[in-house]
Image (cartoon, rainbow, N blue to C red; front, side, top):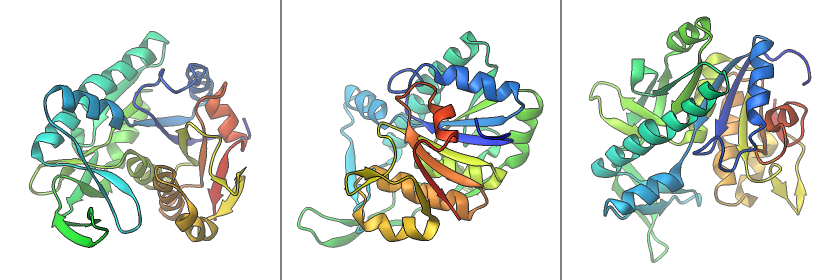
Length: 273
């Protein structure tokens, strides 16, 4: 790995085993032995959809005018989202980490007021006829604050925080669904992390059939219109992380051997100033 990394915030999928190379455990151990402070943010949208539909709650997805697809979260969906993310998935990840000698703790954004957010009152979406319409915002939020002191206390205890993408609405205390990539970017920015890392199922951002190795934040903004669904969220989060104070963002494959080590060596797409 290139140089000493003091702080790393890494976004993984819904399971640290399914879809992520198991050698990520070795990467985490090596970094922790070097004194790196690490936060793992996990997703799990597919698992939320699976369990919601088992419970008879059909999931609705909406598309923004910019083409970004997201889950529409009403109150019942917010409760199922919390149950699956902070209950099942977070505990599975912690169990795997603990069984491999990595002392960890799972947190939602609610716990200790880790992530505060402003509830979105209205959402502008594209309807079935291709028109822009405004709908009630539901239980989704935009992050407004990260409790850095809480994370610092956990680092002092040599704990690795595993964060679920759920925030608390400041003042009203509602549970809000927040995007996992954006949770990663805000935590990385607040901690002034050296690296904000997004592990995915591709080698990085692919444009014109080639992996883009390096981009400035301005170049990344200019390319957004050409980037497909899913990857667009990671690029937006990558830009945000750098603009909020992270040293750089990396989008890289989680499927390869030693995925974090490879990403820190620049094998992926690096977005920086």
